Amino acid sequence: MAADTRITTGVDDAGHTATAAATAGSPGSTAGPGDTGDDGATGGGEVNGAVAVAGADRVPADAHARQLAGLDALELGGESSGGPAARVWGRLWPMALAVAIVLAVWQSVVWAGFWPEYVFAGPADVAPVLFDRLTSGDYWEAIGVTMRRAVTGFAVSVAVGLVVGALVSRVRVLRAAFGSLITGLQTMPSIAWFPLAILLFGLTESAITFVVILGATPSIANGLITGVDYTPPILLRAGHVLGFRRLQLYRHVILPASLPSFLAGLKQGWAFAWRSLMAGELVVIIAHQSSLGERLFFDRELADSAGLLSTMIVILVIGIGVDLLFETADTSLRRRWGLARTSA
Image (cartoon, rainbow, N blue to C red; front, side):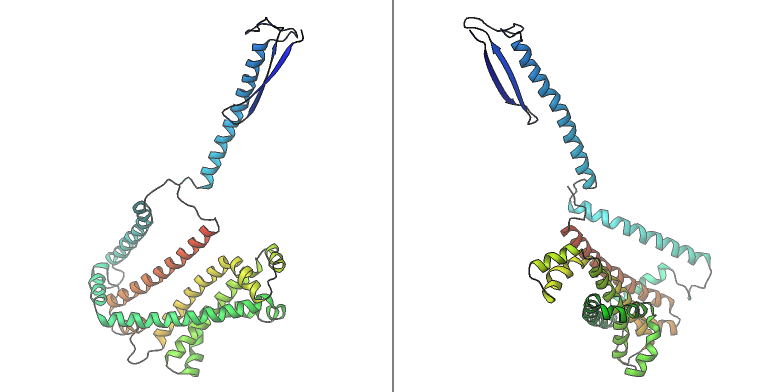
């Protein structure tokens, strides 16, 4: 009687399919392990061979899985999962270390005796003066005036820079005419604008705002222009296919694609605006409007080194605080784009 061949199919642990062929003899005969059927093949040997093949397939699969796990760990940056307290501490201790180093260097210079203490006060002399000023309502009023000027000037700069950048980046004639001019305006020192500003507006707050706008707008416009220049053409073609034209193309395609460069331009624009504002408040002293720049001016006139350094510390802390806001926005944008490292 002809031999009966049976096909056995199974799935191993790695997900591979293994097929075994077992050959049985005529009725009444038993093909056990090692027995040979009519076709001269060993049934048990074939089953064992199929298992051996499945085992051989499992080894490369397991190795491949380990390689993928290693690549995932590299992509995630190898960061270990930590709680909020660990993340806050990881962010604060480098700052605390930097402050400690600055204080140590500052005190070392004071001890070196290059200048008298009334000219260059040490941390021990500045700390009580800073505390007294921060507990004074008049000093907080001066901070409020300075911040109002900064926010107003920067907001106008963003609006103007957005319009100028959008026009210059998309209109070829305007790019040829004003592209280099915008960069030239960006390189001009803000203090150079104050003689003209005082002639135009006098010793008023408008003169300060005018210089702040001229200092910040070119950086913001250049940031947007750079972002538009590096927008992938395939996104523009996709926008045209979807029916976007002009303003819709800017809103839904160009602006989102240019956000990283635009955000960098905003950050640089704020730095120029803040520097221009401090220069303006030192030059343009407005009666009955106390500000941080005015405090610096009178501390210098009175040779009050401790007061001058305390106000400089406040200006530095405000600048760092605003920079942290921009850094938070940049981190949020990179996380949304899948570019930021996330904790496992």
